[in-house]
Length: 242
Image (cartoon, rainbow, N blue to C red):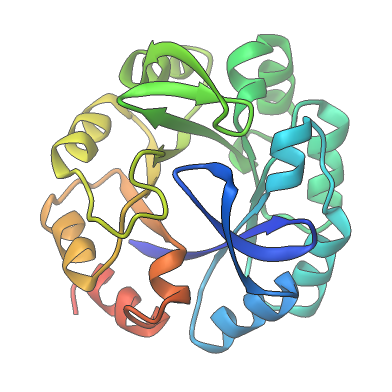
C-alpha cells in the first residue's frame, strides 16, 4: 500500500477541514507548493491534491498551484476538485496531474464519465465520499441518499476500476478508521481503491494492513501528518509491513 499525503487547497493555502465543513478549516501552510515539498522531502512517493475551491464552485480554481507542484517536484500527483467537464479534466492533466479524480460529475453526468474513461481510462479515479454510508456530492455539501456500495457497483458496470473512498464523518477527526466499513467497501470494489478518513495513529494504518484486502492500494492521510502524529516514512513503513 502507498501512503498519499493530502494537500487540500482553499483560498490559495494548504488547509484541512473537519468533516468536510468549509467553515472549520485549519491553515497549515500558506503555500501548497511548500506543503507538497515538505512531504516529498519526507519521503512521499505520491501526492493527493484536492482543489477545494473547485469542488465548491464546480470548476477548477487552483490549476496554477497544481502546475507549480507537478513542475517542481518529482513525484506523481493525483488531482481532484471541480472536475466536472472534459475540458477541466484535460486542463488538470495538462497541469501535470498523473491521475484525475472525478466526484460529482461521475455520478451526475454519465456521458462525461464515459468520455473520460474513453479518453483517459487508466488515469481516471472516481471518488466516493460518504456520510453515514450514503454518498455525498458537490464538495461534500449535498447527500444523494444512495448507499456507497450500490454506487460503486453501478459505476463498475460503466467501466470504472479505480476509486477513492472517503468517510466524511471521520475526515479531520483523527478518531480512527471503521475497519468493518473498509472491509465492506473492499468487498464491493472489483478493481482497486484508496481509503481516506479518520487516520490518526500508526495503529490505524496497521489496522488497515491487517485487513489484508488486496484491492486496497493506499491510504490518504492529511491532518495526522500535519499534526506530527507520525512521519511519512513511519506511515509508509507500516503500510509496507515493516
